[in-house]
Image (cartoon, rainbow, N blue to C red; front, side):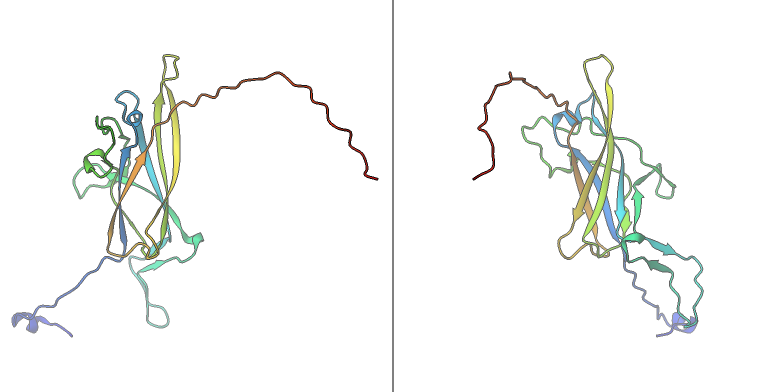
Length: 214
């Protein structure tokens, strides 16, 4: 139907329905053990990257083609059209610009419980602002970046960086438009691995002669 000023004077108001056409991913990180949340040498998250299933092109002022049709947003459909997006955060009020993600420390998020409660939101640290991604994909690939200062016994802690490749999936239905997903990532601390090697003496072994069968 069409609406005009005359319709408005008769209290006939248009109803407009808006729907979200993207999926939203919200990220939170929790320590997987006591060492990860160590007050002195905690694991620190420095970034999360998401490889989007597709890459979109936004046209602010669309012009019609020969058929009189136009697209304001065009999504790619091949893997070559995918794009890697880094999570950012807001430095202040809701209307402020997004800035690169600040460090997110795991210090103090582990409790004294014998078993960590991964269902308790108080044990998670929110990481940056939510991402809006193209729906219908069944899997998104992530990279969690961070570091931990490790006491190597020299008196000066050694900084070790890491990148954790992860995949999040949503069954056979994929990620649905207009739906928000809470992605909870559990990170375990970096631990020194010691390998003990024991050398044993050589033993002399006599093998049977090998020859051509007759």
